[in-house]
Length: 150
Picture 1 (tube, rainbow, N blue to C red):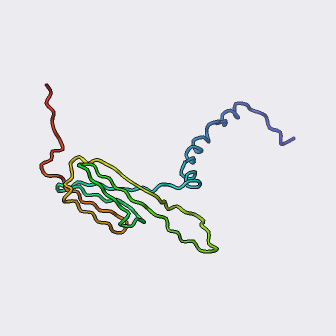
Picture 2 (tube, one colour):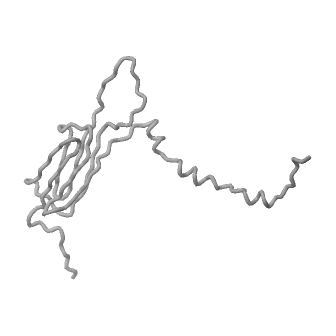
Picture 3 (cartoon, rainbow, N blue to C red):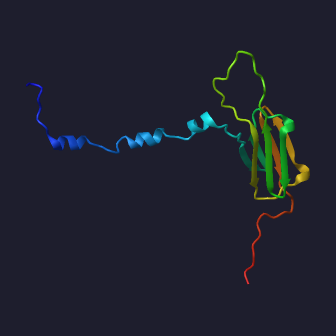
């Protein structure tokens, strides 16, 4: 009879937290593991855009892309880049893929700059998976125009 303890309902209510573990559950729940298991993730182009000395300098990460598979189009102040990452087909007999996190397919980015670009002076260089663009601003093109109100 030494194991019998007196029931205190208020002490039990103080420890009862019906939603206490929900915070941890929501933190652990993400869509990334679900996406990686069943579907392939599209490749993304990550960019840095800088402005200096009357030109825009752009560095775009495009790992695993061949130079011939990169396309850059400029219309006024709109810049469009696209690249295709192709999957290499190297299969060995008796080998199996344990995990594949690399993405394959078409990737593109379109953005608008504040000033028009002088298309005749554009320089593009691709080295070690990084596309470098030097886009000079068009001389005489005003990026800002004040509209008179009548």
